[in-house]
Amino acid sequence: MPPASSVGLGMRKIYIDADSLPVQIRAIVLRRVMREGIAAIFVADRPLKDVRRAYEEHTALLRAAEREAGEEDSDRLRSIRSPISMVVVEAGLDSADNWIVDHAEADALAITHDVPLASRLAEKGLVVLDDRGGVYTSENVGERLSMRNLMGELREMGIYSEQHRPMDNRQVKAFSDAFDGVLNKHLKQS
Image (cartoon, rainbow, N blue to C red):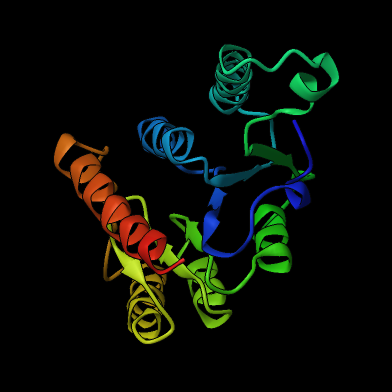
């Protein structure tokens, strides 16, 4: 896959904290970025087969479309690549998060389940979606981070026990709707 720096600019770029993102959410993102031609940078501490497969399929489709349009230059055809990329960082606490923060550009979109990462990115000027359809900006992420920290303190004191529920169809739809809404808004602006 091409390095992340060789793909689109500004809001035409999405950074995905792929370490903990459910497969069905990655599938939604991959389908949309393939349709729109938006650069999507998936960052994780391991290669993700679904992202690799989407990159290869999208590259093949783009090249086939150029062939059908009459392109015969094999060097030109080989240079055509999907704007989907995968960055594999070293395993370690927050290594993917730190890579995203270091490389993310203001006015881009990010997707993460990690509230502290969402806060760091929103402060840089990115719009951040969580995997349940929550939208975070610099104006509202502070409240969500405070709530997360409070719940962590209550868990440590034994007062609260968080129960993670598996993602259901309602939550997948909420993400899909929020993703489409944010993406459509930003695509109109760019």
